[in-house]
Length: 485
Image (cartoon, rainbow, N blue to C red; front, side, top):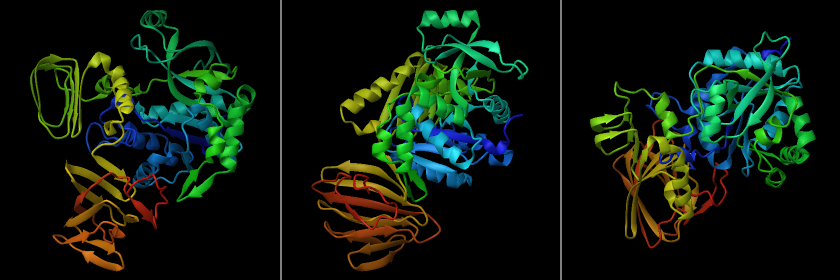
């Protein structure tokens, strides 16, 4: 007898930065939040959130993310009308084993028979119905004390995945579940070709269905320091605007280790179920091209493009028109502040570019020109000597902190909506086509009291225009001093 559906808790891991999908994916706005194909398509995160629906009997999800992304997560769950069991903020990155240990403790607090359906936030599944059925079958296996992996039948000698060799069938599951005979980490090309030819191994999908109690027992046996850190992090956790903020010192004591290395490759409780639902981990531009809608010569185009004698290319442009002649198998991604041109077979190496940008302290690896904030976003329009022009978009109800700048003055022109502006002791409504001027060192605040977005052109003038020239007080979003604007 399997568990009741109310015992299955989707656990969504959303801590990654998606470096191999730069320049669309940036550390402050990574790939799980991006709508790659069209504005009508949901993000990868929204797909993960709706894959195992409460209406189908699954429990409310547990999300784990880092502090920088917490308001992006909140916006996504609110847009979808989902009320998570918890949004857990990881104060430092510690990989998947400590994160899942925390999720298991949270789920067991809610149900002693908890089963975890652990999913990365940035994978693609084409058939949600088949996936939900597979999770239910895996939960039946997990209820017997097993830790279940989903194996994907290899279609090529991929060197970017771990491989699982399945063993004997598990009794009572109609030949659909198997023991795990062995694991192999990401192989070289020749080894991957041998695995493909043998036909007895599957890709490790990175999706797990885990008996929460068994998982914690195995963590305690194999890496007790992980369980100790997870318990300490939860014991010192604080509620903050609906987020569960883990204790930093407690969580930082956990080793930085994946669940594969920490548990799955060592446990005797592992089982594997084949999964055929149109899975893709979207780990590179080439894998995104694999699932993209393409024309009859293999090109995917988003934005403006003129193509001549061009085939099997992925082209994304946000402003400029892209023109190509006599090329194939290219990835061209043009954003307002960065351009990537890569051979489609080399897109796994995009993370090397990001690493070089990080070493050079280039902001392009961290932020887009559009920077998202809990109140909306701002977008840099122009920068020059001693001036900067931005567009501020404040969503209905959005309130910027009361703030002051030492080195710059600001001119605000309202181009849409009506803003409530506080400057010093004076408060006023500023309507479309009206403006205000804020002198350096004046305390000021901007708010949208209406039901439509407020948009403002902000012109900054001064000797220093960095986002860290800010003193903040009275912030409704409880942001730390280092979180600017």
